Length: 382
Ligand SMILES: Cc1cc2nc3c(=O)[nH]c(=O)nc-3n(C[C@H](O)[C@H](O)[C@H](O)COP(=O)(O)OP(=O)(O)OC[C@H]3O[C@@H](n4cnc5c(N)ncnc54)[C@H](O)[C@@H]3O)c2cc1C
Image (cartoon, rainbow, N blue to C red; front, side):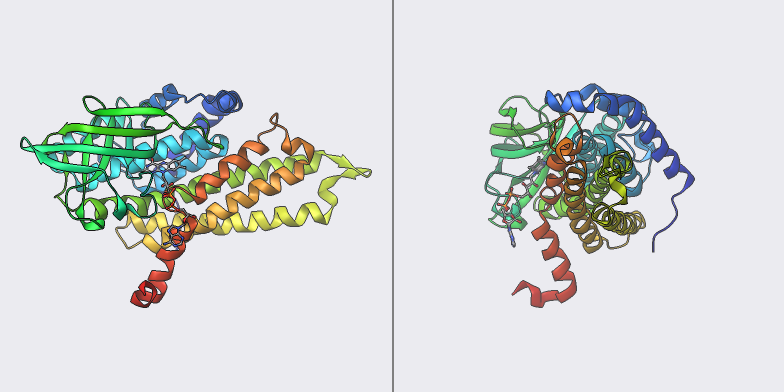
C-alpha cells in the first residue's frame, strides 16, 4: 500500500524543493568545505513552517505526519545531507517525544517555540558505551530537591552545538532498558556542550558531546513517568528511521541525477560514455532500487500516519535505502571517473555523506535485528 500524497503534502514538498534549490544548493559546497553549520537556514525553515510539521495546530505547528517530514528531509538531502539531518533531528527526534509523551502543560510550554524555529531541538540518547545498546546507559538522574540531578555524558548529539532544548535520556532505575527516563532540559548550570566532533562527512551538521555534572532538572521536565524512557526513545526512533530512509533516497536521487547528466555529456572513444553498457547497467540498477526504496519509505510513513504498527516497515526502508545511498554515491563517483574523486564536484561529498545513513538511528545490523524479530518472533531472541 502506497497512498497518493495529499495536496498539502505536495505543497510542503514543493516548498521544501524550492527552498533547497534557492537557499541551500548554491552554498552547499562552500559550507561543507568550511564545515559551516548554517543555523540561520534552520531558522528560516522555521519561518516557512517547515520545522513544526509534526506539531499539532493548537501548538503552532502544521499538524501533519511523518510523510510530510520525510518529504522535506528528502528534498533537502538532495542538495545537502547535513542540513537535512538537522531538520530530521529537530522536526522528528526532538519534537516527537514531547508531542507524544509530554503532558498538556509540557506541550504548551515547549512545542510552539520548536514549531516556529525560535528554539531548536536535539535528542540525546547515545553515549560512548551505549549506542546500539541504550540499556547500557550510564548517565543518571538521581532524585534531589523534589526534582532530579543529572550526571554523566552523551556523545554524537546532532544539533547539540546550537540547540536550545534537549530531550535527554538518563537512568532513574536499575541497569537495563527499563530503568531509563526522558527529560527536557537546556544547557546551563551543570550542563556543558563540548566541541564539535570532526567527521568523515555531514560537515554542515553539528555533532557534539554533552556533559552533565549535578545538572538540576525540575520534576515537571520528566516526560511520561519514570521508567518510560526506553519506550519513548524507541517509539521516536521507529518514526525517525523512516525519515532517515527518506534522507537516503534524497541523496541517492541526487547522485543518480549527477551521474546520468555526466554520462550524457562526457565523451570517450568517440561518443558519450552513456552508450556503454558498463555505464548504463549500474545506473539502471540504482534507478530501480531507488523506486523500490521510495515505495518502502512512503509505505512505512503512511502506516505511521495512520497510527498502524510501522517499526519493522521503517527498519526495512532504512536498511535498503541506506545501502542504496552508499551504492548510488559509489556509482556516481565511478561514472565521473577522476572528476568523481575531485572535491570540485559533489560526487565525493555524496560518497562521504551516504555512509552515515547506515549508522545513525540504528545501524544496519540493528535494522536487521528488528526485521528478524518481527519475522521469527521469540525464537530470534535466543
Ligand atoms: C554523525 C552522527 C550523528 C548522530 N546523532 C545522534 C543524535 O542526535 N542523538 C543520539 O542519541 N545519537 C546520535 N548518534 C549516535 C548513533 O545513533 C550511534 O552511533 C549508533 O546507534 C551506533 O552506536 P555506536 O556508535 O555506539 O556503535 P556500537 O553500538 O558500538 O556498534 C558497533 C558495531 O557493532 C554492531 N552491533 C552492535 N550490536 C549488535 C548486535 N546486537 N548484533 C549485531 N551487530 C551489532 C553495530 O551494528 C556496529 O557495526 C549519531 C552518530 C553519528 C555518527
